[in-house]
Every structure is written in structure tokens, then in C-alpha cells.
Length: 360
Image (cartoon, rainbow, N blue to C red; front, side, top):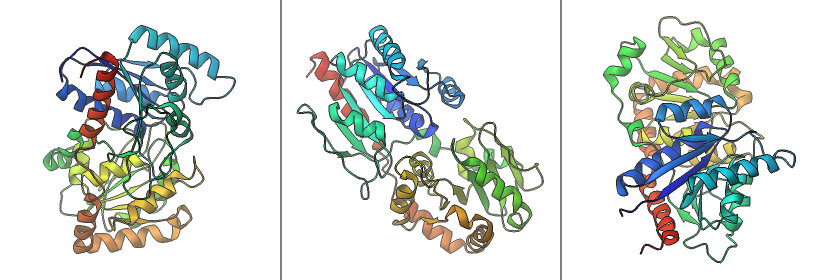
């Protein structure tokens, strides 16, 4: 499919929203080399830093959350930005910035494709689905399907899986070991808390660091502006990684993570068994639902936050000592990954854009 077209990608407030957009865009580029893209994110530095490192053009809308007070200004910014960029289709991934973008796109008659990564749709997805062309889902079983009201929404309610950047699975174990200085003779635990709720995991790791290091080497991604423990033998920490992440996945035998859909998707793509600590009470309790849906595969274990202090060390020790358990969990974790999710969404986006452009 070769014709001039532009896709607008809207996501913000979490790298878990933005990274899948990059995955879909790379798939669009392969299928339609003449296409172009523009991204819309929040003013959060994590959002902007990630997009800068990916080398894509973007606009940051003022305000991280939509409110009756903030919406008029955000809607005006979105209206002007869409008028300037003239997209042929909009991909809405999640976060407050997607609401004004979707409203402005709808007012201009631009088709909208929504993707919901989580097992339970967020408020933005629920709202935008009312006038979207298509709604795609990341979880095959356990996702709450929305009733798409627009008569023009076809196809709708499509299971595509969660798009994951291809290069995130192409890491080098050798580079990962060189980066961290680990010998590779012991299991490696990767700790990452995402952009929300990381500090509680960081505190638990710092408190029990010496006990954990008896069983595993640790890679600890603390999150920007958040603290972990002082570096010591067997413990490597950074606030944020980008290009190095694939190499760190390549040396990881076990992960301790929150239960954002993006994190689960990347761990599944790499077949990494996980201890998921869902952040409870956040946005329709979606992390709990994600963790429950993922745990049904057998590839991960759910650890409630209240049990971090008393159960974490024992769980890590047991998994570190039993290679056969981790191997079985790894195979089951991979069942959560749909390798062609990025392509499936790209095809839907291209079809929407072609329809608007009058290309059959």
C-alpha cells in the first residue's frame, strides 16, 4: 500500500501507552514507506524523552489530565495541531491527552482507531470508543469489550494483541553482561516499576537487597527521579534505560514488575517469568485485572503489595533455585504475546486512512 498519508499517534502519561505506538508506526512504515507520522504526548518529561530517543516528531499538549478547566485549552491546541498536520487517521492509545485529540479529529471527520492494552478499558478509551471507527484489544480473554455505538465503526472489537517494538526482543546477552558487569553464572532479577508506583518496589528491593543478592544478581530500573539502593557487586541500577533495555532483557531470568500492560507485553515477548505486583485502586483497578489475566497463563505470579515485605525474598529464592520452574513459566509467558500485533493494528490504520483518502 503506497500512497502519501499521515497517521497521528496520540498517547501520554505513561511509556506503556507510547511504546506500542512506536511499534505500530514501525509496522506502518514497512507496509507503506511513503507514509509519515506525528505523535501527541503529555508534557511529562518521560513521554518527551522517549519520543526524542525514537527520533519522531511530536507535540506535547499542556496538561497531563483532562478536566473541565483544562479541556478547552487542550481542545484548542489539538484542533490547531490537527489543522497543521492534516492526518488521514488517528491512533488513540491511552492517557488524558487522547480525549481532546479524538474530539478534534472527530469534528474534522478523521477516522479514529483505538487500542486498549489493559484487561479493563480506561476512561479515555470508553469515551473515545463512542465515535471511533475501530476498537482493538490486547488481551484475548479477560478484556472487557466495549459497545461501539457509531454506525461507521467497522470492523470493531478486534483482538489484535498488544503491539511490542520488534527490537525489544533482539537484545544481546553478551552486551547485557558487559553493560552490567555480571558474570552470567547466577540468575538475574530485573526490577522495574514503570512510571507509576515504582518507589514502593524500589523501597522493598533496597530494604531486602542483601537477602536478594544471596540468590540473584539484580538489574534495577528505578524510574526517573526515584531512588533505589547504592550500587554494589551484583546490583546494577539506572533511573531510565532506552537502547540498552533489549540487552537487559536478554540477560534476565526473572522479573519483578508492576502490572502495566506494556510491561507485561514486553516481558511476554521475551519469555521472562514475572512476579507481578499490581498497583491497586488505580484507574478502574486495571493493573489488578491485567495481572489476573496474565497469571491465568501460568507464566507469572501475583504478589500483593502488602506481601512485599514478608514474601518477596522467599519467592525470588525459590524461583532462582529451580531452573525447571522458570523454564516452564517462560514458555507459558510467551503465550501472552501475539507476534504480529503491530502488523494487525497497522493494517487497520492503513485501511482507515485509505478509506478517507478514497484509495481502494
